[in-house]
Structures are given as C-alpha cells and as structure tokens.
Length: 125
Image 1 (cartoon, rainbow, N blue to C red):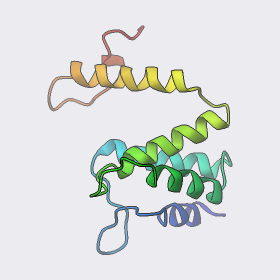
Image 2 (cartoon, helix red, strand yellow):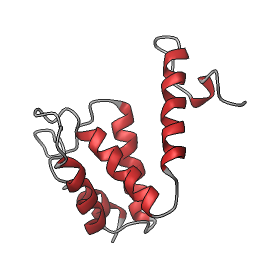
Image 3 (cartoon, rainbow, N blue to C red):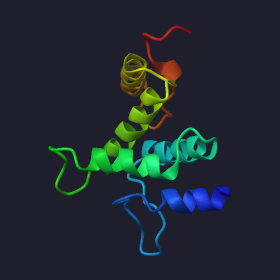
C-alpha cells in the first residue's frame, strides 16, 4: 500500500470529521499530529488497517462519549495508545507520564509561543 493509499484509508476512519471536499478537519494542531503519527506507524507496519479500524471503533462506541462528537480525537488518541500498549511500544504509565508532562509544558508556555516538552518545569533537561 502506498503512502497516498494509507492516508486515504485512514481518512475513511469511522466518523472522522471532514470538510466539504472530503479532507480531514482537525480542531487543534495536536489532533493533526495524532493523525500523522497514526499514518506513519501504519505505514511502518505496526498495525493493519483492520486492526486500527477495530480499535478506533471500540473507543468510539464506549459509554460516556460526547453526543456531539467533540471528543472524536480523544478517542483517536486512546485507540492509538491502546495499540502502542498492545504492541509493547509503550506502557500505560509511560503514556500517562508523557500526557502529564505535556500538560505542565502547556501551562508553563507563554501565550502565543509553541508548546515544547522542554517547557515542562519537572522534566529533566
């Protein structure tokens, strides 16, 4: 499968928000980055299209989802995290630590500046 076919397949992910011309729409830069990471890992063979679709679908159908779909990319990240854990690439503790580090970095970053993990005041430099 070529890179364009991979993007095309992932663009068909269940309930993916799309523009009028069918292109994915991302509410925040982190959502686009999560999409790009997923495409890259799929291209590298970490998981198949059917494995991705199954994992994402499970997240999208969990009880407690936002009725308006505003948590779609939260589900996307949860699905990706689940695949990373199941493949032994990361463990839940590692992912949680990174989430906390990014949150601290965001809180420590002046408005209008890029959020960098290095901005986390608790992260080793």
